[in-house]
Length: 326
Image 1 (tube, helix red, strand yellow):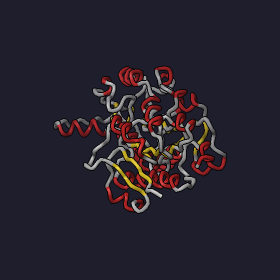
Image 2: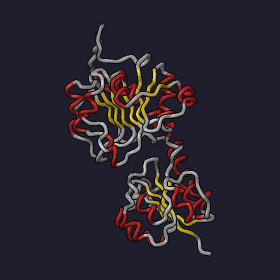
Image 3: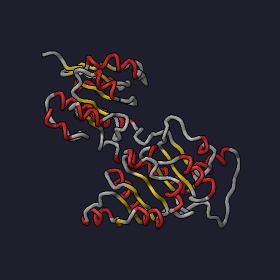
Image 4: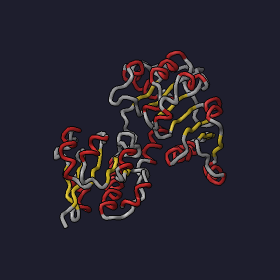
């Protein structure tokens, strides 16, 4: 039996492939930071049994060209760059990295919240410019301890954010389409509210829902108008969940007080109006950018991918209806 071949669209440290190299043959860019273009992948994919997609879309033309493909893994928890519905029609399992981004994403969420609520980037810039401005009585910052954090989406990451926020002395309320069992709410010390109640009552709203076409721009001018003028907004989930021009206008006109964003609708492009706002803290989609997290993500993706190629059922499959084909 010939060795099964796995294509990786972006360079990963070769030492992390060693546990799998006795069974599988890997093709990936050689240079550090290198990435195969979509056109190159489209040309090469017919020869591969497995595909680890990093920062490249996988659409219908690619799946149609992938004559031998048995599984595709996304490097990350979100898989909106993969046409998983079409993959499901073809019986191809789609995998992701659902557990290894939890703590690192929750951690950056808290960092963004603290940075914007305490104006840390602005103070840093002013000190470097030799501006030493302190005010005896001012509402330009917000005390985090005792503030109410509203979480939209109470999955793995939402729960991790809740745990960290509670450790900071915050009260936490949440909304999720699927309410958690009472024992889970008691475990996390969190209170369920309706979507509008979370918006109206929170001092900071943090977004942690997956992107689907149904929730495109779920945060828009109408949504922001339901929040307190003193409230903050954090998004480390998906950029398409937020109407960026509406957010920019809300920040400029005082509809809300500030925002922290790690994701954007048209990455790497950021809506121009956000760039000049001192009450917006912006990071370039780096929630998982720690070496420990990235290595763990690599192994979670490869463990699932190689499991399928061995004829096994992995835990990180996002379209389980195809399991009968494994």
